[in-house]
Length: 74
Image 1 (cartoon, helix red, strand yellow):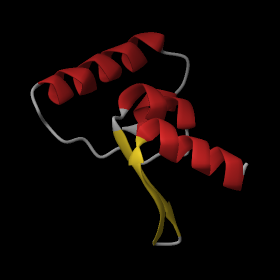
Image 2 (tube, rainbow, N blue to C red):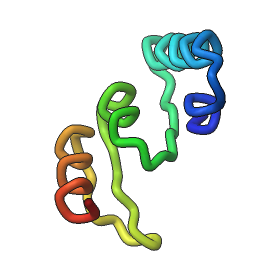
Image 3 (cartoon, rainbow, N blue to C red):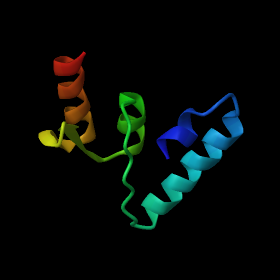
Image 4 (tube, helix red, strand yellow):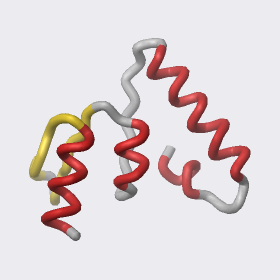
């Protein structure tokens, strides 16, 4: 999904993909999003995991995990 959210200049496709992911989430589905885009994680995720070469560096609420990532990796 990450590539679809970033691809090209077609805002329409980004909005459509984002809306569809929200529909899945509202229906109780689990969505696995793999990305380096912290803004996307904060907007789309309730929980997050930060993996560093297969090692879990942080796990928990998306805001907390992205903050740790930005502090340490930024």
